Image (cartoon, rainbow, N blue to C red):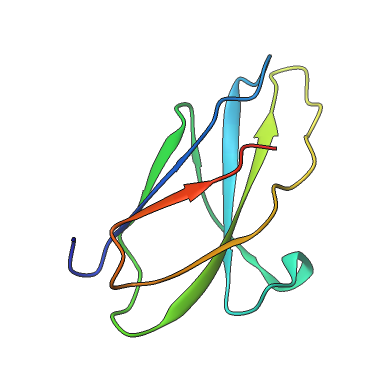
Length: 88
């Protein structure tokens, strides 16, 4: 358990060069904010607030500029240190 941090991890997507991570307060992707990018299948959210619940989405991308489809959302309260999120 990390205080104020959530480690997200997901399965790799074939031909993905990077992943864009979004976070929101609801389960609606269109209301989520860009959180960051990762070139691995993990991302540490160090801006999470204790006691608050977030929803996360991961979008695979390629250097050819072809964005992927957002993953299914995953929600975890901050008391959980690792969130397994689908990579598709």
